[in-house]
Length: 237
Image 1: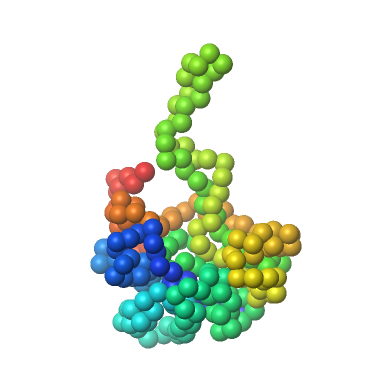
Image 2: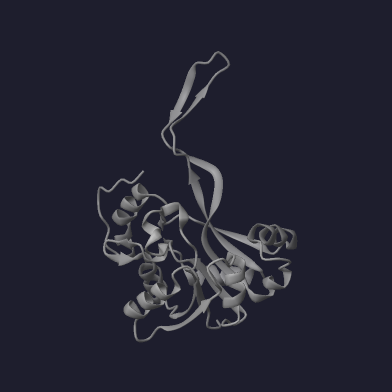
């Protein structure tokens, strides 16, 4: 297998997590004292992926300084700054110039225990342009089913729903970027669907992200799984 680089998107403003992100970029928000970006990079490195392209923008100097403070000696890192207002797709395009024909893209504020080697192999087997990792949506509410008379006949507390959402991990073949018509991410994905070479991998393991203070507290309880330390009795649902 060719050497695959990890492109990490760490340039966004993280507006949903204000006021925390007014002073620090979201990938540098700490969980148990360590930036979430450090967890993400360490997890990739433990799985043999030690070459990174970090896409910066918002508070880029802080990201560069932080990464240089926690990186390991055997990590190889390039930084690409596309500017604060750049779209996600623009950042990926710019980062791709540092990569070979395949590369992994992941969000700098998300961690999941994905088997990256298997993901890349499946991408190759499918001759995919992009493979996107998905996670099953859970209802935030208890759901009730009624009969025609309004009688409740079943109740499920926060059940899994028949929908899957993007959790910010992708394998890209550089060929996919030939289909870019503008820098809009949504229209690009819609174009990818039309190619019939846009595949999904459904992830059922751990997935940690956060957009609110409450979700951050939950993420801090879960994050130890990435050091193979499991907290028993922690319920974040």
